Image (cartoon, rainbow, N blue to C red; front, side, top):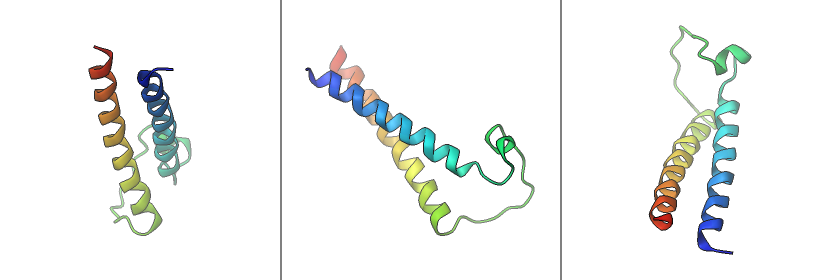
Length: 75
């Protein structure tokens, strides 16, 4: 197996985790929250919600970096 295979596998795992984190955050208004349900109340993120938000950002950055690495190694 090549290095590119493992990088693609890591990319798939990161993408599944990223999808799961985004779906966990879309709470409150049921499925409407996933598709842009509007909440007119501004609130700050605290505790677990803040941790999930930061983990989502971290996974998105990691996904981007792995994607760039995959393109560089393939070419």
